Image (tube, rainbow, N blue to C red; front, side, top):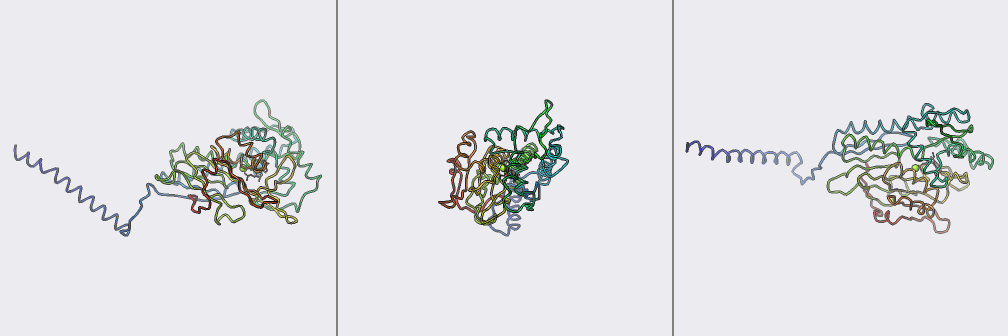
Length: 369
Ligand code: AMP
Ligand code: MG
């Protein structure tokens, strides 16, 4: 009995020795594999991709989880939105509505088109028409089309501008009791270019969140939304705010920290524009006057959803800094940065108080790939 006890007494020592030698061996192997340097071991591996989508570039950064599945989910979400909302696809809901303008036929909407239209109607009303998804005819009159090919040279005539502006009349969009939509006048055109990319990012966000991803940054042409953080020791994703006077890869104006669930969007006068007689005309229209917006170089909005950030960045671009900041009082969860080209004072940067708190000037590294 005693013998057995003794044997039992010794067993834990042996087990401890085996564990210790295992730990030492594993440590030696790790050190060998890392070249014996001091190494920060990330909590999970990073995967990132870029691909062309919706006339711009999409990118996805994922830490942890099945990386290829994340990419597949994000791509599918963007594709789904594009096939419903693209004004350039005759088979999309928007393509069909535009083709049927003036014929009297109602077009049935798929759920996502309905959601984006409902939101757009709200933004149109709230902004007094500064945000107007019926801006299509004005875009055409000024020669803007996807890819930046210019079909019109210079400033269109007053007649052309006024005719196009008349076609942006929201009271001429009609909805049937069962949710169909028609545009009453030939030549009217829906254009969700100011809101659809944000919506696509939100859809990708929902899909990725639903699939259990915990650390993701999605970007679609400057419309971004974050899940989690890029590292356990960080509070958010550091996002560069571009300097509109410089190239994308140059020193940005600064960075902001995008926290879990939040979105950021930027509208800039450099996305599409033409220069005529020394003046730049950009692709963001003031539908209230039928002219491209002047005096604003860039607007960045932080918001709870990417669709809201997208719509509000375009809206504030049109409204300008004074009206824009007043308008944003309706959205206490949103913050804004404006870059203005003042005729007298030159380039000015104006921020809402909350944006200033989040903004770090001139910092270069961003978590975006
Ligand atoms: P964003 O880059 O999000 O500011 O969107 C700009 C795009 O939105 C343009 O290329 C047009 O397709 C469309 N757009 C231009 N002006 C307006 C406007 N005032 N309201 C709504 N959409 C607009
Ligand atoms: Mg927008």
